[in-house]
Image (cartoon, rainbow, N blue to C red; front, side, top):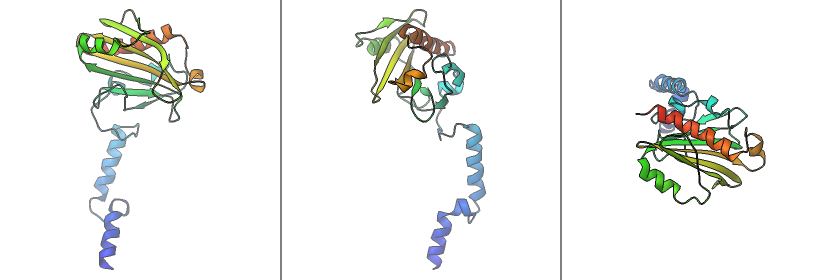
Length: 192
């Protein structure tokens, strides 16, 4: 009986207050919620959405409220990228990442796209794929790759076919590429 009571107490220590450490656990959780109001349990380095970008940066691409997700499909390591997405039920999102690699990495990213087209006025060079099928089932995307100095930016506007198109501000590839390029330019401006 004593052993099962101890086990139950250990299991519920943080909730039931059986342990003197319970208030500390609750205080740590409260402090984390204040530091990370998004509640996605991200504990890595700041992402572009924590520093240079905000949910307002998505307003000229997605016409419904968006939230920040600290995950990025284009980022290779924590802190390189993030997503600005239209809620938990996926309809549209912007996935953006910035990393080092310079012109050689940029060339590697852009050499395989048969539909590539330049995006003028962004960094030392930028190109877009135009709208293509996404690797997200039922999705479409437009990608922009840009570089400035040693920095490479990857910005993608991904949406579901049908419903996702309704939340896009524009269906024009040129317009969306220019707006994604502007997000990359904002990230470049914050780096030496």
